Image (cartoon, rainbow over all chains, first blue to last red; front, side, top):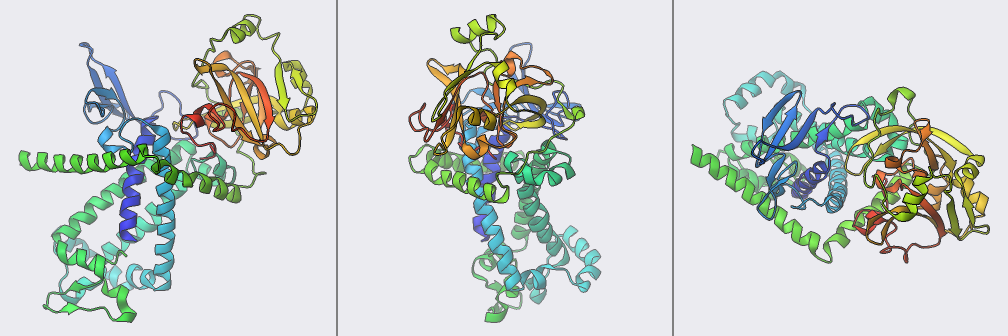
Length: 271
Length: 251
């Protein structure tokens, strides 16, 4: 499940950036009024006639030629495009194909997510391993300090999620995961016939598009931190835990999961 | 440090490029798009289930109307037939209605105004991502279908347009009968209380409340009631559909 999610999320990010490139501006509300952009990846020509790529945000403009606004296309020449071709699926500007990739993997993401949540509820993974206990809350200060110092739990302690992990995973699953799907659906004109209370609650369809975009990057930020934490806490052991469920504790013995506690024994259990 | 940073940058760009290149090969293969296309049928079925045919698109207030309703695609059809009509302020315009109907008709804007009309302030969502809000006044397509006696066996309504996207490739679109008979599906002749401007599709355009912008065909010349659109254009039900966009434009 975890690795299906990795594939689906990556392809949705890449194809999502392709879709974003079709109109590389974000707005708040229901309308896309010219001059009211919150963010624009733009392009213009300088006095010498060269293409200049820019990002404009809240009245500030930064030159980003080569990456945002203007970058090299698949034929190697500079072209006007929001995100660069090495970050979009398909590489060249091709909105229709980007949409196909996006909607296909949206279904993969949603069905995989539903399977994960129902499995986790049934096996009490959510209730037991992710929902913070009173004790977890008491230890939050300690846990924050440990994280800042890059100190990771050892021994049996490493077999359970700490409070920050629990909060991070719950936020990613239920706020980012559910939120990005709902914001995606809020952009669908057909679904808006029944979802308009939600659309208006977040400010309008263009707000939904903006939030969808922000959550996508929040996912990227989460993945960067997540991969970093896995790397510094013993990458081989963690990966083995993710894939097989075996996780070596410091005492030297290999902890073998009992059949009825498979899930709690899998440190980061990302099945 | 610079070396390490540039190495990291190269590694990220390289990995991303490999994924993108792999995906591009799939996009260009014969089987890839067919697999990805499975999502369209799923989108349509699930969305129709969750948002029933009778569900109405949200209608806004006068205060919500866009100051400029951005015209997209063709903004001035260059065909002689259109230019001739425009030169006369569309006074000679007649919409041809035919196909599976018992009383084929040529309807002027005044004829259309005599049928059931509706005014609605609705949001237009372009496939590119932007939105605009406009006040549309038009004749209910269902009233036109009743007026000409559309055959109950018919499944789609095809909209033929004056504007050509390429030589001999006129714009066209189609919707199914459910969408055609929806109360917010109009043949609009006015935008924001004024006759429809040329960039927005004068003298008559389609408004479908719950589909993306490319469905909202402009510069209508003829509507045809059919059982299948296989023999029209490249057979995908619309100009953009022939370019690879989904026929179901509800998302």
